[in-house]
Length: 77
Image (cartoon, rainbow, N blue to C red):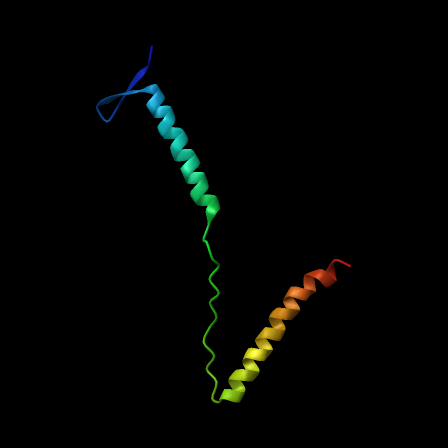
């Protein structure tokens, strides 16, 4: 025999409530863990007065980012 519950004025069988609960649980977990598909790399605009200055800033930022990637490996030793 099936146990019935009253939900919003309607009789609903217990197995349907269980399926709805599990579906919501697993779908919510999947969506929470999946995250964005691609990381968004946003950088502020470079307001340089000349192209030489803009190139210098870009090269400097690349060297800083390269040092940050190397630093954790050097800290392990």
